[in-house]
Amino acid sequence: ELKTKKTEASVDDFLKGVKDEATKKDCLEIVKLMKQATKADPKMWGSSIVGFGTQHLKYASGRELDWMVIGFSPRKQNLTLYIPGSLESYADLLKKLGKHTTGKGCLYVKSLKDVDTKVLKELIQRSIKETKS
Image (cartoon, rainbow, N blue to C red; front, side, top):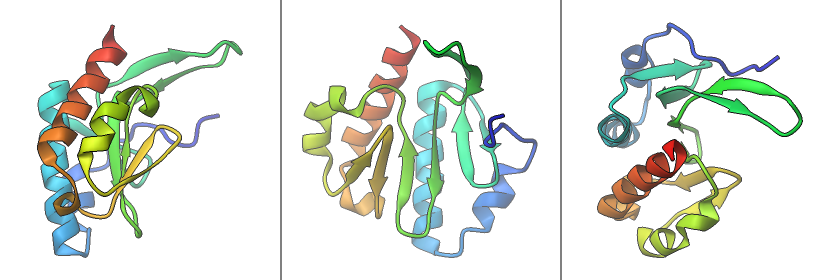
């Protein structure tokens, strides 16, 4: 059973609860970028992830689940962006992005001031386009 599911919780209330003002401002900017790219309204996934769109995933193991197309979470140490697809396929953009680290399917940035937001926007748009194709 998947722990992180789409909920009816308020994204606005969640973002209002972000204590650090700079992080809150970054979150609002990421909402704009992801909403523009997906044409979907933000929804809460679990208690701390803001996701956009829904896709049905089917794994080779036979496991199936519904998951967000793209999303993010303001974590204590950084902003975590859940980018669909393999981040290695975006190496060209990641080189130009600025200060970040990556994990499996996750892009971590401390602050949007550390990255080129035009490159981030392109990364978001390209990852969504590749997911849909």
